[in-house]
Image (tube, rainbow, N blue to C red; front, side, top):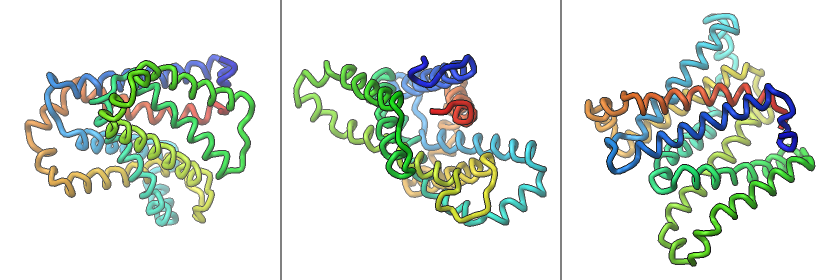
Length: 269
């Protein structure tokens, strides 16, 4: 575990908690998208998940940072930062919707392994933009991830181009999902560090709230643009959304976000 920088019990606990939550969530989503499962509007689930994240972030702001008056002052002093979060929120909105699309095609194991290629892209882009050289352990991790992904898919690649061409759209959507995650993550990191924002620094919780508010708005616009707002609000869709399995997905997705914030502070990756 030292190769990954997990040299303490705290770091290892956070790491395995993070992995367990994501794997559980993807298994639930995969099951929910099977033909024998009740149909539901995925964007409505993403919207509700982002709304739950927004509620959690605002609660943390009010609880830890001086109450409602302090929140109002911070928002008034950083209005443009709210606007700047519209871009990464859009990218994450696309990413979160593609989770449901891609897990209709890829099994959770293949999906999770291939999605780790975004770590490779993120590491390279992070080094380029922040002028921070990756250390030896990080380069080894990137190489291991790349080799692991190739080995995992080698059996499919050995069948020839016919299989690849048949799933070309699915592979393109998976690549689009990875790129959305990479660019949104790097841009979000720039905002969190204050790089290029030009605004008075605000807390991480408030910046998270800015992100989730924009995400809620983008998902709402997606539903309007697709003409599916009525479908999302229909009793049949809501009765499926508010079932234990879908509620578990929303709860895990929301808790994973808070665990990831803790992990980023606890790990020096």
